[in-house]
Length: 605
Image (cartoon, rainbow, N blue to C red; front, side, top):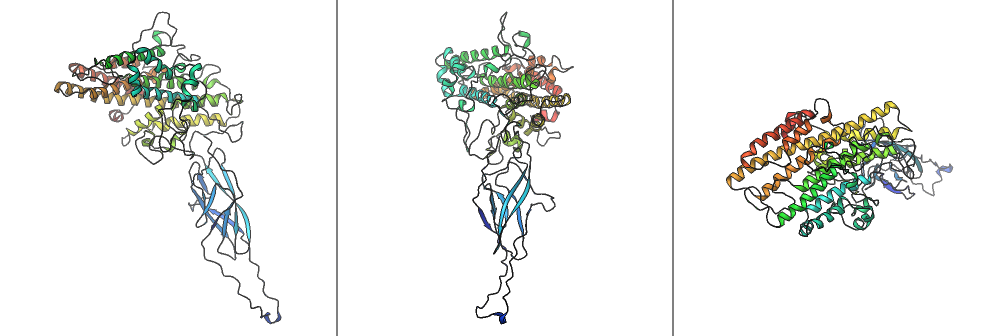
């Protein structure tokens, strides 16, 4: 983002340095003509220098890190042979002079390295008789935030990916809607009513986009501070939906083309008609929507029961143990977000797409090149806030931390609002932090957040710093950054699958004991369904990256084997639970082997 800056102003900010006052000249008696001699008229010397001293006495220059709000820069030291007391003012209204001669940014102000790497301010010093101006200079240090300035428009950001954020919001909107009381009400009107409402979110047409989303308030919100955008239309006024970006529907350059053949897709049973032209991932979403409508009718009729006989009252939890809402959301994280990054924006091999795009001139009417924008769109689907590395893992995961960060978002530009396009952590960016948290204190902790973000950052920095086309060597380096970003992202997904295998195992043990003891509830079953469906939904994601470790020599067939072990629903017959838990353990072993995970981390996730 481009952080806001105040304009230079001539209004003066004044502070008095509280130093010991110098002695004035003696009073002269008007009747004393000094024995007829001319009076001594000593001239008061003006200040000769102002030096900015940083907090680090050993530093050779004064520095301040960008994005730090209201930070103290250093102390202004005046050189003056006659006076010890001075009044200092600064003409740049971003700054103030605090007690003791401290130069500081004012409340709400911060600096942006991408806009200025060095700052010079003019200060005016007054002693008892004189006034003089001096320039003082300090350096701004770069922070690793996703903030890059256009090579074509001075001072303007070249980063833009509002379409990707719009789809992150749509995925969350779909999830929130299915969980809502409103959906329960609609579900009582039948399948057609359900599908109509689901597709307003999933597959809204260009013709209807404005009428549906211009005024419809988002359920994705923030508090303290509130969100800048309250509608999807405010995030992106041009047509956006989910269906159009599902793997195969945006087919140019994808490693399986249109994804329309049965053999293109693995891990989930879906009927693929003969001569099919619809992408199989799209068929999976359609199937899940149909299952949701049918299950809602069953639950609403009172005909759905959990093991042990307790009535299921959650319309998206099936009697077979599938949480359809979780399945839909986690599948879309892969079939849309991960697929778009891995198979489109960060991929190569197709001229005019991904890394094979132009970096010599700005896109018409924009402040970025096509290559810059392709990379940004790939980053956008990861879902990280632009100052992602300023957060702790706890903060990204929304599990505590500092005020202003602990909910997973941060008002980085201090404008009193959360901008979804830059200041909020979505999707898999939060899963990476959650899995890093799970290894804290282990002998080999992970740092997937850093690995992913640094790769995205370094790739974008390379593109931004290259005037014109990348050389062959630079392109190979860029491909390396793309692969590294995707691998860290995919590892976060894989670690999350391991996490839910562990949770599901505990839930199955509870099911066996609860049903046998006559104390198993529908709420217990909903927890099992949730964890199993997150496991399964995320586990389908790996096939959307042609560089996945599952495609590496020696791992061919392991993806399909893992899904055979998981099945299309959990085993919920108490007598068969132990055997199924063993299969889940084997699936976990596959993930540990394919991704080289540490055994202690796998056990703790």
